[in-house]
Image 1 (tube, one colour):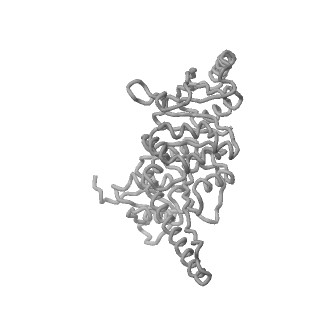
Image 2: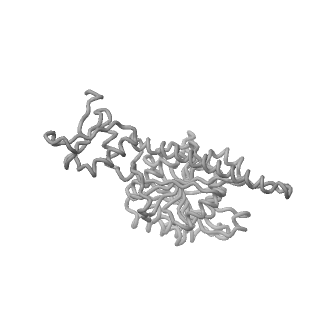
Image 3: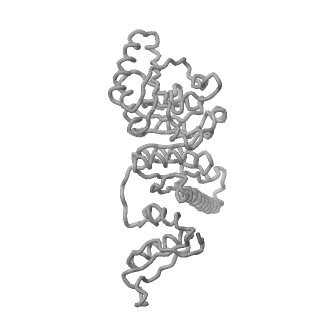
Length: 373
């Protein structure tokens, strides 16, 4: 193999060959266009697109996914369901993006990376004569923050694109959004307006989350989000999706459990999952043992009839829930994924009686899917 030898990648008309040449050059590849008809030294209908032999695998991957790597036309606007991935450009958020991209590839949908930044607030003790100066300073600071945020997002997107080009992750179409505001409010507003298929967020380790109990962006999103949310702890390998086998499903033994199970099945229809059903009774029903047992059996029968790819069993659970219940005697995680329905609560109840998903988030380092019902 001669790495510097030029070989033909494709033959197109000049009109089609030129955009491909521009695209490959924009990705850092050396490209030449040669006329097929050597007897006529003008660019005619047949044009060879030639690249270095060493660049051939990368060039093929880019050309085969032309719509992903090409610069989008702003005049063409299409509406498509997406998976939303909030990011703060940390390694934790990048690790969360990998499972999101793999899910998007399975569902044939797009990814939207979003970042929210806070602008400075003017001081309250500003003198009347100094208001104009402070306003100008705030405007300039806000402009600098926006420029920096867009630069960071561009680098984050380039990292994702490079991973796609190298074949580390599937190639899916993605877009980016940088906006001003509180991160949790921006994410929730986006979900209300655009109704994404899912929100995928990275979270910190359990011991770190405990020290930051108040003000967790992920917890706020879980409480208010009306689309499924997938949380990926920073301690989890980002290729978690390929190894997901054992799922702990928390249920209340009511109609909402069916809706949540159906949503889980739509996200992972081709995986062979072992799903353990854990009954988490309401406080008023925790002394009613016999009716719950019969309802558990009815739910188990329903699941086995309607979700053939999954293997269902009934598990026992001690309250309150803690991570120790999901570990084997040797300390390994007994489950790869937690899944639970999440009912909407008022602001008052969210403050004084957080949802189960909210509480579990701070006590475990296991990926979790929260499905609103």
